[in-house]
Image (tube, rainbow, N blue to C red; front, top):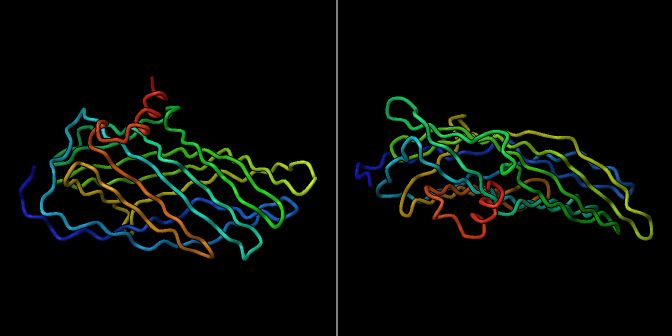
Length: 234
C-alpha cells in the first residue's frame, strides 16, 4: 500500500443530470420528465491509499439505480437497475497515471432496467436498457471516472380496468456524470479495494439513490453479480 500522506479530500461530485422518470396519465401518455436535483455524497477520510492498478489489469464497476417518482398523487413510477457489473480495462496513461476505460459494443454492457408503478387506477410497467460507457484514470490511489449513461429501448404499457394494455414508448436519452468540475467522479482506493459512490435522489416528489461500486479485482465482486457478468461474457 502507498503510505504517503493523504492529500485533502477532493470536491465531492454531483452528477449533472438524471435518467428520465415518466409519469403516465390515465390516457396512456407519458408526462414531461421532471427537473431533478441530487445532494452531494461523501466518502470516509482514509489514512492511506492503495496502489493504482497496472496496465493490463481489470476493474469492475457495478451499477445500481433505484429511483421513485410521485407525480402529485396522480402517478407513481419506480425505475430500477439491479446490481450489474461491467469490466474496465487498465491501459498506459502516461506519466504517473493509469488509463481506465470500458469496451464499447459488448452485449454484457447492456444493463436491464425494470419500470413499474401506477397512474390513478391504472398500472404501468415496462423495461429499458442502460448502456454505460466509462473512461478515466488512476493517480496516487484515486480513480477518476467519467460515466456516460445511455437510456434506450423504453417499452412501456399502461393497463386500466378492463381495457386492453396500451403500449407507449419514451425517447432514448443520454447523461454524463463527471462531477461538478468535469474532472470525473472520484473513487478512493482504500481498505479492501472496494470504493462506493452513492448519490441520493431528490427532486419533485422523488426519492431513492444512484450507486456505483468500483472493485479492484473480480474476486471482490459479490458472487451473484459476478456470475451474471461471467455468463454474459462467456
